[in-house]
Length: 238
Image 1 (cartoon, helix red, strand yellow):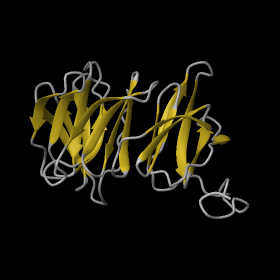
Image 2 (tube, one colour):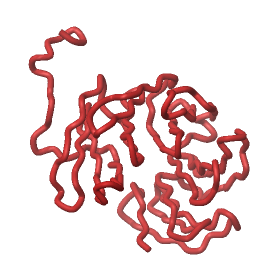
Image 3 (spheres, helix red, strand yellow):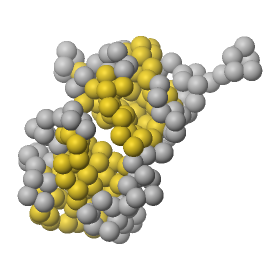
């Protein structure tokens, strides 16, 4: 008996369901020299081989539905409610991170650290191996509600945060200093993506605009617009 009910009929794998609304995570296995895609399915996640699109593994279940996933070269991170879990071998929980008071909705692995943001405005930087809190920032969701984040390439210890109000902030997570604030483009930020060029990032908005922006010079290089809804994700090719 778990959670007050029988575990006899608890779901293990959903046949025919490859993913839900939670954005997938992509990881590269150096030893296998292959890419894998991680998709959330309720309380667990499935890992697929990209070349063959065959399922490789099904993770163990978490207590609640997964709200976001992320991956680095060693671990898969999944948030369910206020708790974050690290999975090894695409299956087993090897570390849990406790500290959020609201539902976690953003995850960003960065070297030996993991950055997470919740719906209450808390952003926490964790030590991946030990599970300790390295840094904690709090934002007022009424003025700056973190809705996207990324690590700009070659920017040591820097994280770019986008908000649902439209503004962006560049932070140094080692010194806990706000380095620069971008006023944005009068639309909530829904996606941030590094381009193949250093200093240049792609910004997706809730109104369907895509802005290619140089964050070092604070200059917009070009913009695109899609007319059928907000930008859910961005990707560049070299």
